[in-house]
Length: 78
Image (tube, rainbow, N blue to C red; front, side, top):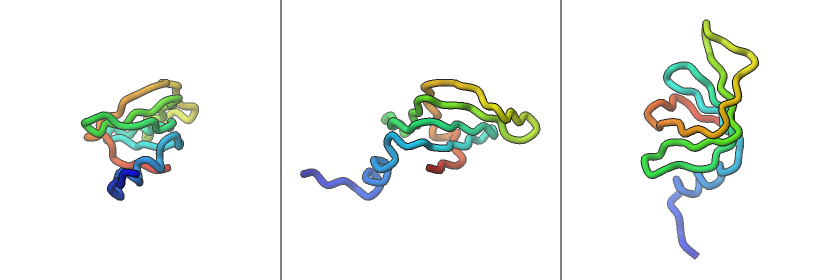
């Protein structure tokens, strides 16, 4: 068996869970976390996008599979 760092273990526990990702431009993505790439960008599938603030859209918009650049991520919650 191979040992993993606590950070790797923590990320693995999030696989296939629904994540709520808030970006710097006040968008919220709600989707299933399926991994990261080498640059640590987040990969979500079955994702909906919501806008916060004055551009609020309560219904959201289906965007499917997306990659969110790590530098755009403000907050992540499971």
